[in-house]
Image 1 (tube, one colour):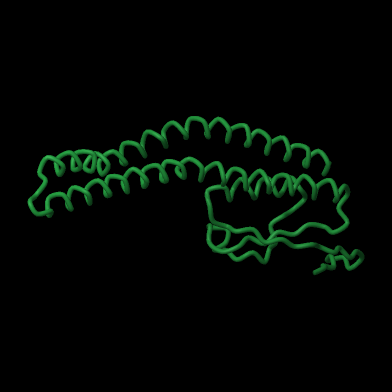
Image 2 (cartoon, helix red, strand yellow):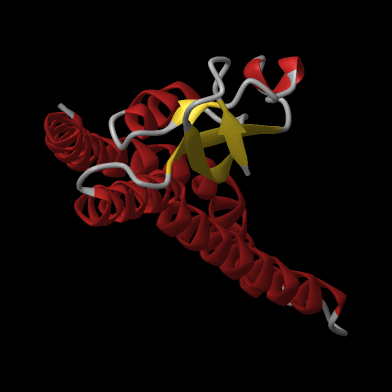
Amino acid sequence: MSEIREDGTSFVGYEYKEIPAGGERASLCLDCYQSFGWAIDERTPEQALRGKGKILLKRNRKIINKMELTRLQRHFESCLRELDELERSKTSQATICSVTVGLLGTAFLAGATFAVTHTPPLVPLTILLAIPGFIGWILPMFLYRAMVRRRTRVVDELMERKYDEIYEICEKGQNLLL
């Protein structure tokens, strides 16, 4: 937990943190955590630096402005969670709508099946129910794509704002370290 320097004169206590190495934002995390006084611990496994496992970070326990840096770090981590939520929101509503339309199509086809197996067969009703049923099976693919495209345009702008906010937070943290 602490380290004695080579000259043997000074004792430095460290605090430690683990962050996941994988993910598309791993490089961003490493860069940003350095703005809050964290450095990669030399005991971090080589595979973690290649994106597998966890990266070990350490920083001096008696760092100047520690409370403010910790507050900024929490804000940064909150922004990362919001980015993940925004990323998931691109497809969540599209998935729900597509599945709902597909289930409605299935219900219409079930009705068409019951109409054709009825004695005597109700052919006009079968045709009337089969048409929206097949549309309900084909439409979800196009509906999903269109909804994701539209939502992506909105979310990309929000994500850019969130990245700008992250960079401002890191800049403030870096200024506190100087």
